Amino acid sequence: MSAQMKTSLLLGTVVCLSGLALSASAQQAVSSAQVAKHFETKIAMTVKLDYLLFLPQGYEGSAKRWPLMLFLHGSGESGSDLAKVKVHGPPKIVESKPDFPFILVSPQSPGPRMGWNVETLNALLDDIMQQYRVDPDRVYLTGLSMGGYGTWSLAAAHPERFAAIVPICGGGNPADAPKLASIPVWVFHGAKDTTVPPQRSKEMVEAIKSAGGNPKFTIYPEAGHDSWTETYDNPELYQWLLEQKKSH
Image (cartoon, rainbow, N blue to C red; front, side, top):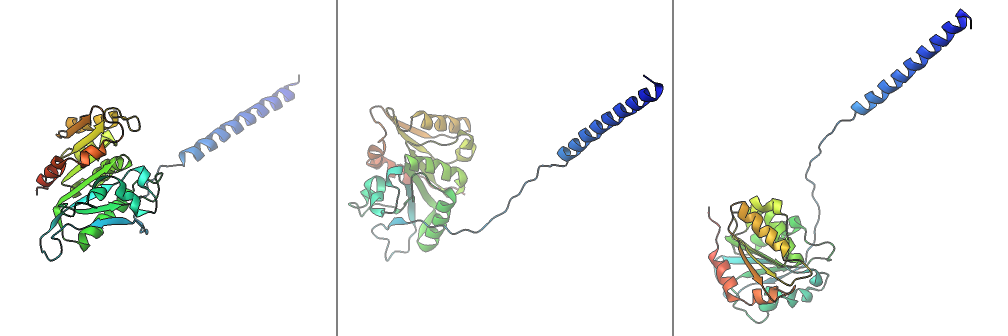
């Protein structure tokens, strides 16, 4: 091979390597040009929610402010027929107990897959507080099954609103425990519940205790998923609730 050919081959190799180096540099430049950013804003949106409202005996014609109970039903009562909400819990009880000592608000979730939207519920509470004579220091939250999950979620999102909460056969996020530690909590679950394992309630109770809270926890040894009938039929529950009041 002549010296001229060797020189040409060497130059070609150098040019090729230089091209590869430039290509790698270009790729690195494209990659490093991508940076992480964060976007956050508030947007207005229209929400709709049908609900049952119960006003206790003595509400009309009185200037006093009343305790409020917000009740969240389970998945089976979802839909557009408000009569279904009366099947379980406080909405069923007040049908035959006009002396029930709370303003009772019982919204209906449009569908079980939609569950409970905490900001929609929070907006509903705002509206109720404006329209009716509610004692802001005695607002209570309770729910069963899907509503038990909703109770944990809403209380964690807005712990400042509630004087006490009563989640029944639901579950929450143990990471929310520090937000819930200062709220009086009474948790109920059936030991034989195969729909929502009682472990879901146990882990919330333990997490709140670890965060410095002092939750009450009742497990019914023989109950399955229906741990709400015995709970809502117990007068001690309502007596306990009425003893809880937000401190300032």
